Length: 188
Image (cartoon, rainbow, N blue to C red; front, side):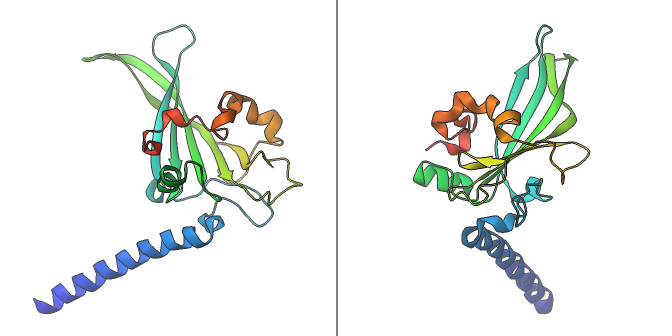
């Protein structure tokens, strides 16, 4: 019995140390999270659903029918929300991952309901306050920007952030290109 408790305690200690090590690695090197390679190519981090912080969701209304045509669910790399609440801005190396789903709408006992249906792809942004990749057309205005189709989280279809990504973010330019009002964890 004593041996089982000791083994359980050691396991829990190792698990806690591993979690602390991951968060510490992010604090020391924000590029260690796996979203950016040495030349500035972005990719969807494989573990974002289990290690990133949930930021919020958006529903995009259908053009004519009732319900939503899209759902956007956003995650942030570990420590991002705490740093934003503390400092009022996104820390260098912060990674935001937005999942984009098509919407499905139908009748349920509670009324007409929309829900996320099929994954369309991901939009990934990485904060770069130091201008690390000046020759890369997917980096600028303090961020790395890329869209990834659902079938390939490792290869972006974006070629130039100003043409492919930034136009949707122009209304949010004053808040560092991010629609922060949609993310309750960023509140103070």
